[in-house]
Image 1 (cartoon, helix red, strand yellow):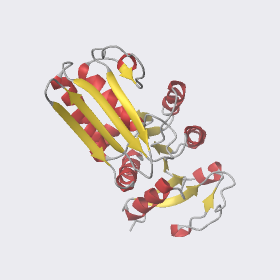
Image 2 (image 1 turned 45 degrees about the horizontal axis):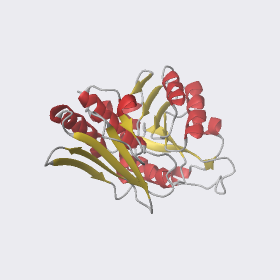
Image 3 (image 1 turned 135 degrees about the vertical axis):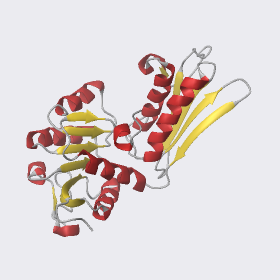
Image 4 (image 1 turned 180 degrees about the vertical axis):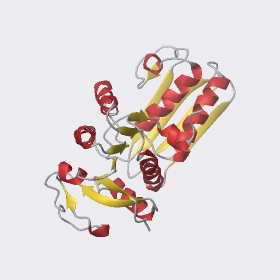
Length: 266
């Protein structure tokens, strides 16, 4: 049960799959309480009463009134609009939305000059440890081991490759001291020739209700290292986001990496 001085949380997409998980984790957190629930305009359940007597609204300005932190797993256009409103209201922002363009990521960074923001492709502690391991494995194994990644998600996921796959590919690139933009290979078809040195391949699969699997492979001559994370539920994503929200309240404006929340930024 939340304490009497618990921080009030606005959950974006409160009735969606992730929104329901986030609300459950907020309810179990001693320092947080659900304060507002936002859904898309015209959602058929606007007005529905949730825990703590909170009514679902589609009015972002009303939802943001006098709240401490937002947790948002939605789509880029929605997140950017809500983030602008949060910056105007001085409300901290946690988002796991993926699929942003470089220009849109710049827009998030600009808003973070006004409010504290955590934007991460994945809020699972285990996935972020996987990123740390991938960076270290890449650094220690070196370019003589070819780096390949593949990921699978449910058939309703909109962006490909996943933000988590790109996060892991970036970890591999950092371990090698190379630019991911220059080394990333997203597809192979036809006569591709020999594999370029330092290429970082990412392949995408979509199907069913898979919550997410990511495999990082370092393939050498006669041996292979595989680092794998499989998600059976979305609970750990929500748990990490709620942990980030509690951590973020009261911080100075800035764009904070999720690694800092988990103490993996060394």
